[in-house]
Image (cartoon, rainbow, N blue to C red; front, side, top):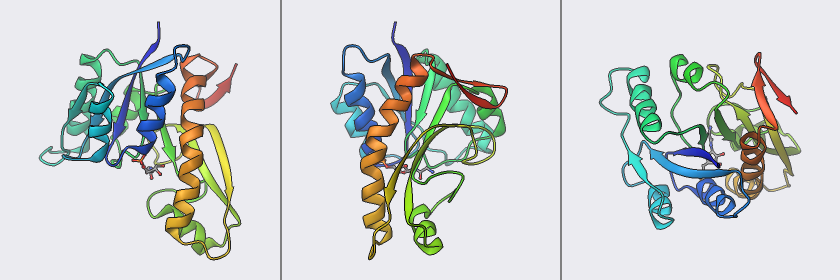
Length: 201
Ligand code: GAR
């Protein structure tokens, strides 16, 4: 039985595309059973539809609180019998309730070598700091933003003349390899969140 996985997106969905490609392999331990998006008309929804994956679009606008919106996400995940959630460019901060509810079953990809450069405008933060290496991180989500235990990372050089856009493109290529590998590890049970730590088996 493959692990029923949902991907949460807000945008163009290039990471979603790489996860779909990985899940298309017959021996991959996860399947994407739902793509959830909070932005009407986001490109990633069309990516999912083209692959024949069920989609659910619910805008966060109009909900009274973060938790109210998260309860709508939770209902969609439960309705689809989701076991594991991958956030891929999902640009909403969760309520503590949601992070706890899905603890250990909630992954995110972030375009920096965490714990450096959390939040937004990540590549500009890296350029402003003058780092010579940047990269991407897949981690378990915990209530504190971009702070959960690390599952996998990949590094890229920061080159002279880089802009936020050129660096983002270099990092994104690595994201597309890293996220499927990290999902595989979690879906196979080779890494677990235990007592607040990523434990590798
Ligand atoms: C990716 O670079 C991802 O790491 C980043 O958004 C982009 C989404 O691109 N996520 C975050 O910044 C989350 N804090 P995509 O829609 O093409 O996958």
